[in-house]
Image (cartoon, rainbow, N blue to C red; front, top):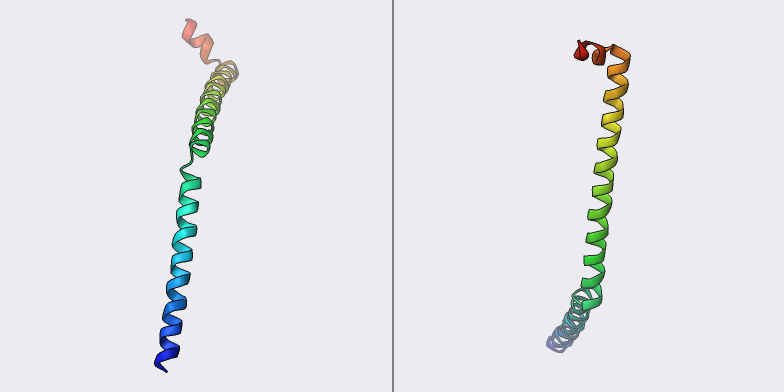
Amino acid sequence: MSDKFNTLKDQAGEKLGELKEKAGEAWDKLNSPENKERLTHLKDEAAEKLNEAEEKLHDLADKAKGVWNKMTGHRDEEKK
């Protein structure tokens, strides 16, 4: 019984060592210069897209306001 326990303990230790090694390799890949560069590029690209979307929203809001003013005659009242 003791031998079986020791064998299982040794196997568990080996598996743990393998998992630690794989985790270290995965961590190294995640923190690689290539991935950092990709993440920076994606971050910059996302910021650019957000700025473009913000500009489009402002344009749409201005157009909607213009249509609303035209439909309600608001602009005519403002001119008076």
